[in-house]
Amino acid sequence: MADIPEELLDRLLASASIEQYLDEGLVSARTLTDYLFDRMEAHDLRRADVVRASGLNATVVYDIFSRQKPPRPEIDAIMLAFGLKCTLRETQRLLRLAGVSELWCKQRRDAIIIWCIRNGFDRIATDDELYRMGEATLLPAD
Image (tube, rainbow, N blue to C red; front, side, top):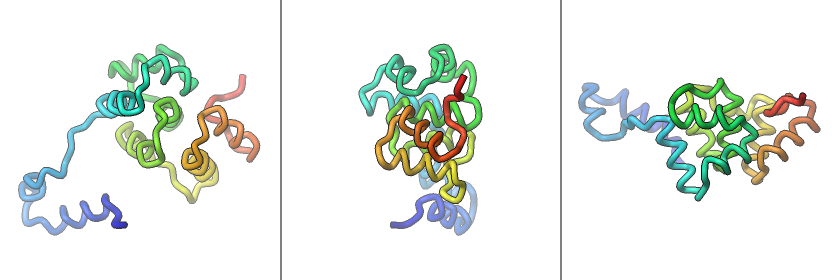
């Protein structure tokens, strides 16, 4: 299967002008908030479900959904992905839209999170696995 971002980059670099590339309709103006609502609807969730499953404070989730504040780098975005029951691809897209680095399988902690997402773990089970493997959990222990 072709790597879509690489394929799009090749098309951009091969374009005679930026207008030619933009006219192909391959660029999206989708916002993080749009994506969050889209995933919530696709997975038949309510915001309260997202709060509960993510482990985030309800006010934080409300602020992110209402664009009042962006998610904190990495942690909030990953926890939102768990709250929205995102697949690995959906999680990576959410992280990109949040402006944070995608999970990278060459980093130990990220590899554990990727494995957990791929195997259907929820946020709590993922935290348990991170703790078991000696890595920082998503929701810090008090």
